[in-house]
Image 1 (cartoon, rainbow, N blue to C red):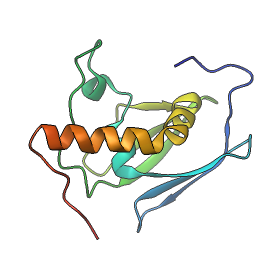
Image 2: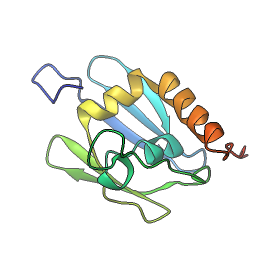
Image 3: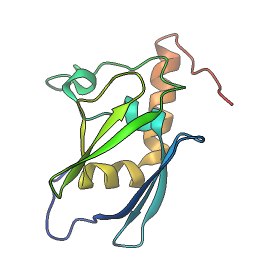
Image 4: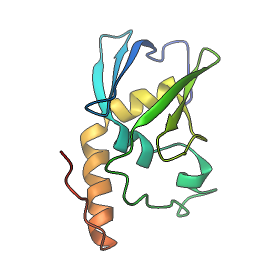
Length: 126
């Protein structure tokens, strides 16, 4: 994944829907998405989740009920998401949020598959 460039899509609006645990993002290229708090949490760009190199990723388990407690701007290139489980070390750059939006379905299915393979099937929530 490449870094932020002058042509990278940038959010024009970010809105948290706490009841449904969805983060709505509108980008300046007319892309709109709804990313679940669970998805954002398990794909956090933090070292705690991603590890310090390839193959060191840590599967996040039991995050079905996680919500976002706060959204903090970081310069003009990212946001820090503070989650209800206390996790707050991931900086979500505009290009990473766009990557998640564009690849949501594939990444979600990959996460569900990893949970199943690890013997921790995802619990359905209301």
